[in-house]
Amino acid sequence: MLEAFLAAWIGVALAQASPGPNMMAVAAVALGQGRKAALLVVTGIGTGTLVWAAAVSFGLGALFAAFPLLLSALKFAGGLYLVFIAGKSLRTIFSGGATAVTATTAPLNDLAAWRRGFFVVMTNPKAVLMWSALATFLFGAGLSKIQVLAFGPLVALSAMTIYGAYGLLFSTGMAMRTYSRFWRRIEAAFGLAFGALGATLLVWGIRDLRG
Image (tube, rainbow, N blue to C red; front, side, top):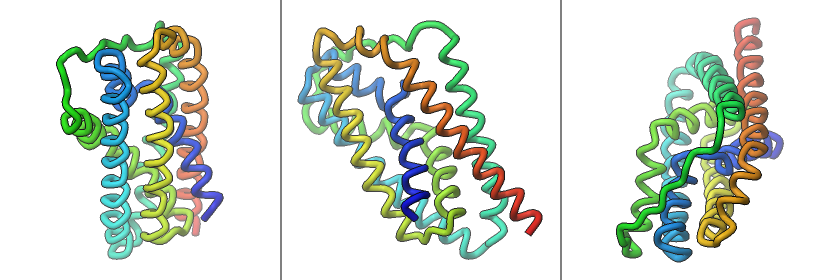
């Protein structure tokens, strides 16, 4: 269990650190509204992460219990998806500058800032695909529904830590210089980590066919 958790968490943490809708939402609010509003957005993202973890843990867990062959099929689908986004991530390194961050200037109260983070993570179509692939990886490693559910707070903690750091960073004058300096390295590490997870799922799927 610990090995599967560690492998999946490294990939997720790098995904959280790389440019994407969640990070851009935090950065935009930090630039336009300041530190407090950005950290409330981060809290909303953390809450949404727990919802996704519960949804895929019990939803996919129930399906796998009812249809055992579905796990083998999803190992291939999840593996191909992770390899695909890994390749896409690595390609962005050579595609030019980082995605521009635009400040959010419309005033946000505390609830609106939290809601911004929650709905960004809940309405991102990539989130359901990534969580499904990760849950397939964890279930494929032999973890139970409760153990997969326990992965949720770990991801929420890393999300709040990483996005919280972005919130603090982008509320300072040195934000864009630091971001521009390091984002390519983070993106490269993310691509390699998710590529490894995807390859592992594909190997497990091939073993199922032979088994």
